[in-house]
Length: 199
Image 1 (cartoon, rainbow, N blue to C red):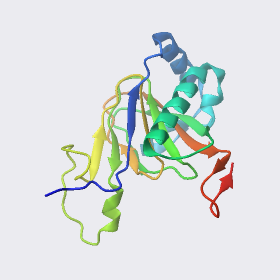
Image 2 (image 1 turned 30 degrees about the horizontal axis):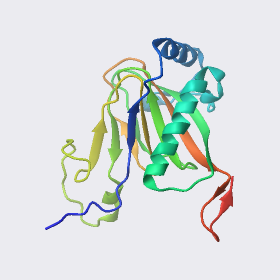
Image 3 (image 1 turned 135 degrees about the vertical axis):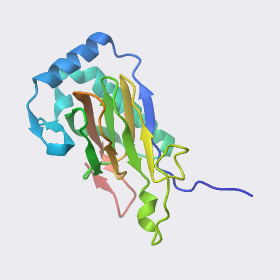
Image 4 (image 1 turned 90 degrees about the vertical axis):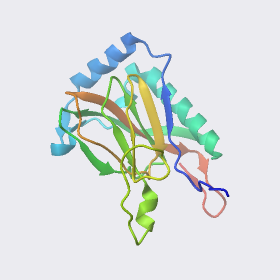
C-alpha cells in the first residue's frame, strides 16, 4: 500500500548565517524609526511599503533573492529574474494577532524574523475543496493531514512560501514582535506561449 502526497505547498525555512548582530541592530533601528499604521487587532504595519529599498537592507535583500531562486529552482519553476515588489515592517504586541490572509498580486512571499517570535500558522488550502468538513486537530503532528501547521521562527530566520497560501499569527506572546514581510514577482519573460508576460 502507498500513500502519495500529491501537489503539496512547499515552504522554505532557513537561518541567515551571514547576518551579524550589528546588521540586526541596524535593521531594528530602521524599523523603530518608521511610521506605522495601526491595524487594530492585526498589529501595525509600516506606511513604507518599500522598506527593503533602503540601502541598509542590501545584504538582507540579496539573501532573500538568492533563497527565492533556490526555492523556485527546487520546485522546477523557470523564470528570467526575480524582484521584491514590496516589503514592510510588522509589529504585533503581546496578546495581538494577525488574521489569516494571503498576498495578492504576488508570486511568492516571505517573512524575515529579527528575534524570537510567536508562531506563524499556515492553513491547509485543500480544505476549501471539501463539501464535508471533518473535525481535524490543529496540533502539529505532520504538515499533511491537519488544518493548520504552526512554525515557531527563530531569530535571524526567514520563511518563503507561495503567495496563495493563507497564513496568520496566533496570539503573540511577546511585546513588539518585529518582522519584515515581502512579496516577490518574476521579471523579464515569464510563462509559456499564449500565456507569456514580460514584467
